[in-house]
Image (cartoon, rainbow, N blue to C red):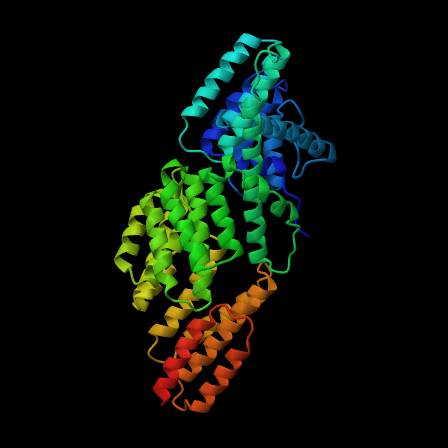
Length: 492
């Protein structure tokens, strides 16, 4: 049975070094913290526990002894009372850390901060000050060119607070903002519903058997068709996105791309990124159906995202995004572009995995160029990255060994069998995924034996082909079929 984690340690390990330093100042402020033990506890945890390793008995005793110097030191383990006392203090620290995160979130989110401030000023009848804030924020909103869902959510809160201000200050009979409030509330509602509809459609694409009640989505079409909403760029793009997901076709695909180009100047980067991702997902689905023309389309879309700086988020590029654009470039035979992309984005990868991610992607490029020796060298230089990358590296090493070995090798066969055992016993993977990989490696072993067997015959190749065709789950049936066809040509 998996041990219950120490929630305080888990939370603090998720903090950056700067956030921990800021939390130290926060905890030391008597305005927020009345417990004198907290600063000492945080200092001890920072020194002895926040390194990602298990907070075991030895560490617990060390933290207890260093923090609570006025109490009796523990022996080899904490007593029941000592453990209860430490847990109680760590729970207080959790609440302080949560309060710190909430205050940090308020600093980052103008909408939430203003909403709380408006209500507070209204309750204290600070009408002049509240009115000044409302006018300032309305002016700022009117000058904002790029509008996303957060914009309309904030606008609806400002308009609601304005109505509350006019009511409580006795001015509602002279003036009102009901038209603006209705429009902003409608836009906020419609965009959230459209966003939710896209989520539902995504879930249905992934889990086809799941059913959802979409009657409310259909009912809101009348509201969406009203001129004041139907002409809004964000509504237009959302509806085009929904149309592509509901009826995947060249028409709906290129309609979305044309609209993205038309409204690009008034769309925030985050919104553009989501819509281009939908277009890429459509192309990827078409490729899986055997439509190879879409390979170039995927690469072109990634090039657009690269040019528009849509692949970097908060100063970083995700390892998955880099993997996707490199794979797309390689499949389109754009190897030079792929190599330059790895070098260009190197600085935006997190330092702890930077070298390994670059080795992996340069290995992928070498593999697609059929330089299997160089690919193998790159892959074995990559340390652990994450589950998906680690599995890809393991499989690509097997493929590289298969491709580059000129003669039968017992160590290579042992590598295949070890990988088969690894996937078969890897309970962290879903059963279907495990089966897909074990089937792939079993056929790979059969092909390797056929390739290096001087008695290779058409009959043996046919048996492998029948076995492969019968497999409903295989992680890379297409590649195996290519290798089998190569062997069949050689046998002939």
